[in-house]
Image (cartoon, rainbow, N blue to C red):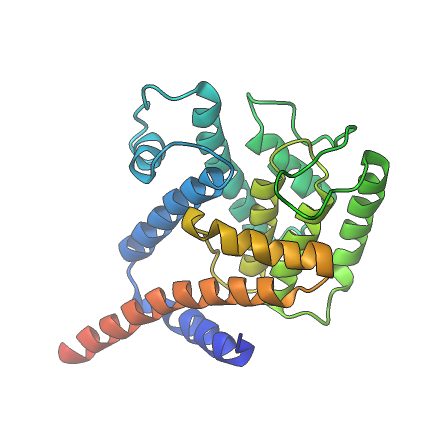
Length: 252
């Protein structure tokens, strides 16, 4: 990943995004939120399609034939993402309470959220086994203690590390993947980047990159994975900005 190139694109986006109208930005944001919620829940096995997710979130139309849990997963994920955006807007740091609140929103009407597990968990098909409850508790406390001191990392590396380290610890009984993807986007947005959505079709590459970190302590594959997705998102906005700038010059 060429971070300097990504930085230039981010700076161009931040400097010129004001040329895009509020309605264009709103359309882009809405489309992203639906896609992100769909992908983040689908990776964990939710069977609602992208169009069903849109009907539920945007049109508030109930989807028949789906388990209530799946409906809650979609609605809760969107609420949790809105909570993340509010926290960032209010300048709040990423701390333990924020993450526990995120998890509690994700798990509403499913299980009691925001509480660390007291049982062992196993991830089927993975080489990494999450630590026992006592060890996981120690590690998650260290995770929060380390967060403010990761100053040697750039925004993409910090987002990658925050996600990979949190999901490696697996502190909750359920919802660790969704929580860690929200944490990742929290870090990206705080650093002026766009939030990203990991497509369910990319989940094998995604899991492989996470496993590289969990088993070999090698973060680079995941940094490159996130960097590529960030670049794709920035490119969409940059194209729209350049198109708008071109139209503006035509009318002068």
